[in-house]
Length: 263
Image (cartoon, rainbow, N blue to C red):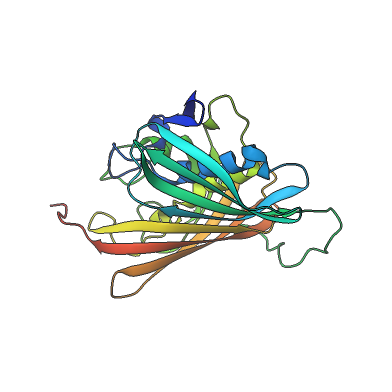
C-alpha cells in the first residue's frame, strides 16, 4: 500500500491510507506534508551533501481525497542555502503549499550540541484503537503507533513512537525526511487539551525544523498543545529517533466548538 500512486506527470492519486478521522472525503495533513516534502527532495533539493532543514506547510483549505497536481519551484537558488517551494492543487484550486530551506552539509563542519537528550524506550505494544467514537480511518492504520505517554483517548501531552506501514508514493523508497513528515501533523491530535468530539481543531500551518534527519524507521515526538481563550492555539513537539533529538515542530491551530456535539 501507499499514500499516493502517480497518475501521470505531476499528478498523484491519493489512496485510502490518506483518509483522516473526521471526514472520509478529506485527507489527513501528514500524507500531504510527506508528498510535498518528497517532491522537493526529488526535484533536486535533497541530493548528496544537501538536507531540508526547515519545511513550512500552509493549508489553504480542506484537502479532498482526489487527484492532486504538484508543482515545485526554486524560490531562492544558492550553492549553500536555497529555498524551494511545492504546491498541491485539486481541480485548479491550490489546497496546500510548502516551502523548504535546503542547506549544504559537511561531515566535520561543526561539533554536535544539545541533540543527545535520551529518548524514551519504544514500548513493546502498539495502539490497537484510535478515537473510539470514530470509525477506523486509513491514515491511522498507515502507521504503527506506540505510546510512551498519553494516547489517542487521553487528554493532555503525549509521547509516541511511530513507523510507516505504507510507502509515500507507490514504488518509491521512503526518505528519512518523509518518515518525520508522515507523522508530525498528528501532533495536535495526540496532545489535545479538549474533547475532540466536542471541539474542532484546525491546523492552519505546520513548521518542522530539523537539525538532523532520522537514522532508522522509528520516529517519535513529545507533543504539547497550548490554548488561549479566544480559539487560537499552538501545538509544539520535540522530534526524536533512537539516537536523540532531531528537531522541533509547531502547529498553529484554530479551535471552536463543533456545531453538533455527540449525544
